[in-house]
Length: 464
Ligand SMILES: *Cc1c(COP(=O)(O)O)cnc(C)c1O
Image (cartoon, protein in one colour):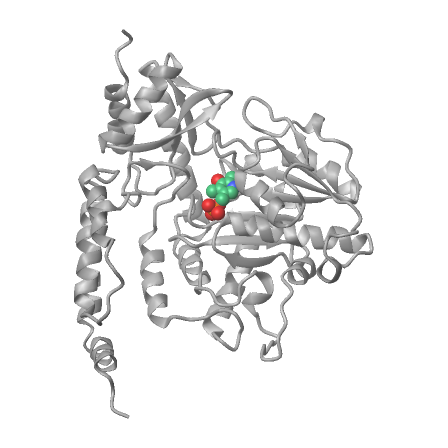
């Protein structure tokens, strides 16, 4: 049969590469401008997104036209978080070598479900697993699953916990579900990240039947208030509070849990990388004693997005919880990635992570983390000079800021969000509004901090 015109067009585009050259040109021009443009898109650029509200096209069109539309109307409406002055959420920057490796891997378009479906993806998953154990000081044979982010990583860690705790009580949750199962106790700080409550709800563990433990003034779980633990318990700890950056007291709490048979999961979405920093690893003392951990590449490690990792010291429990079967599944003695995650097909995420770790090395990860923390400390110091209140102990990359009154804080925050010089999110801290600064990109320089502090001063309304 003769090619249809769309097949002919695709063959042509695959062969002559102009489409890809065009995409690189757009990307290069974006990269050139991103440090100087408005950090948040201008209102006109956002209004212009209406351009995308069109009916589903009937006929094929040239790839160039599709890319041009995306570049011309999409690019200006992006948030410039790969520049140096975006401090929202804990959204990380992106390391050039990791981004470039991802481009290459995108051309490969691999499926890492099984070894047989992509030997290279399987190899890099395995290498990253070993490197992560070394970098994060985790026990031998700790297993890694590569997922979309920490929300899913926490879901997987808790699924492994649920499976193992019930298994030890003689109950097979995969076969029998939770109906009639021996009750599990889940113990969580009232400062746990919202994704933890989502995971508990998805797993049928109930957001409202958990035992909540109060946190201290920095958002750390109060060790003395943790109820007595036993083999029915899953205890959630946190490495990096999303507001203050504070770390729970792992050493003491994990030691207590160890004697009781409780499972400890550590949510270390952005904080777990502190292990690579000689000056900050004290924050994680004892964290290696947990049973499972979740961490993101796309936050403080600055990999491209879609890089979350679940780590579990009980390989069999994780694999059992992610149980997968099917007659056509060809397993091997090599790594089959789908055994460790909920999905079968997914991007070969380990490529970006491998490139990041290979490029930075242990020292480079340490320097990256130290840089974020040093810039956060600089922010706090400079803002205090200008009579802003710093609400947290700045131990990591997070700074919580308030003005003299809640109304002033709110006004300052909305002026900052509109100013274009930098962008910060807001939060409630101890019942009052606060501005959250999260230094999460390698791009942020001392000068970026100075310019942003000036923006804070300009944004603050005069007292009257
Ligand atoms: C960001 C974050 C999460 C969720 O991670 P995603 O990658 O966005 O799914 C969970 N816990 C903490 C502490 C976080 O900062």
